[in-house]
Image (cartoon, rainbow, N blue to C red; front, side, top):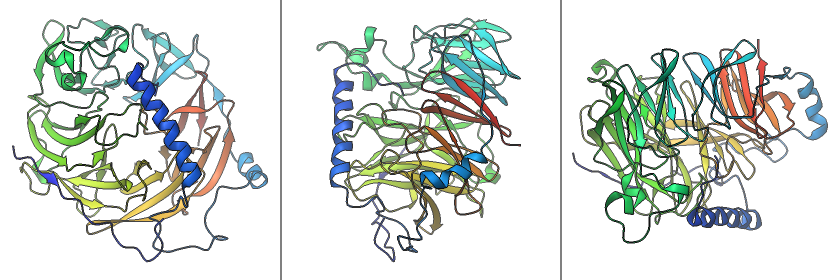
Length: 472
């Protein structure tokens, strides 16, 4: 397979002025301090949060803004009622699978919402790791670090290897894909002098496929190294008429580097330098994009984005470098080819260590620029190899600094439900009306997770309490 170094396109010209639980250990503390210092530096020195936006410039008086406190009162009157979903203990994480809401308590109990009540399914699940539900089973990481599977109303036997603490899962009809890595007691790094993958955790994080053979056991392992917190994603990047290959395909962020881009906004200082398209059955790489130094993919997973005109599936993700983050679309230009390419790119934010979190809603592409500093919801329109941004609304967010949850926003009908900048309000923005706010609801504690099932929105706050709101 040929590796393709990404050629960095020049930033497109515009007509106006450009506008999780924290890891442990010494390295993580250094990353956290770096994040705080970077944030304080930005607050002190940032001349404008609007760099790279938009083509049509609005006067200050006409620019969309978050409503003032007095103006927010009518919006709160229109908000749906939040209903508490009491659980026997504090909830640590949400997941949606097979059209139902799942949760894991901070003690590791797996729950399923039935009506207004939580039903206990099993225990022993790690609340810091993602869940994957589908094909009649729920897969996650055990508190001890092993694969844990709930299937047929019970916990099913599994056998090693141990899994990376924050890696994601894919449930397949006949298999489970996870991210494996070394198990180190207390989360500390291996001692100097240890040999092999155990001596370097970044070399040990690989994709692993489990198949059922008198229990779930390893049947394949990738020869390429993935991100420790990678979230592999099922996707078909070839022409629609080609159909999926045998066993399906996935894409995953890979090539972890601690040196290329020190930011730490996603919980550590490790960033991806590669995006790999691989076969689900064998985990053999099919195509790759490798970014040239000093660029990285500052993300945990790309998002599927289907072009309206062609129906081709592309990948929306974040490329970061000396000029900060830029939204990019990645595709496989030649069906069956060994190369992935950046086929369209938006302007960078203009300053190193400025980040954005993408949002895909149907065939439309958005991102919240600097979600920790100002939070500007921005819409994008593709014109050839350019993604042209338009500023829509500020004062919102879809990410907490240091968290690996990059999806703290959920669409319901024409509305996009997002937290306010403080995360102490939920705001409903109408995407059919230039993201005009339709309602706001105050929260007792900051929101840490959002999910939607049908016309119901579910939120989890920082105190471990779950709520539901019906938008019917």
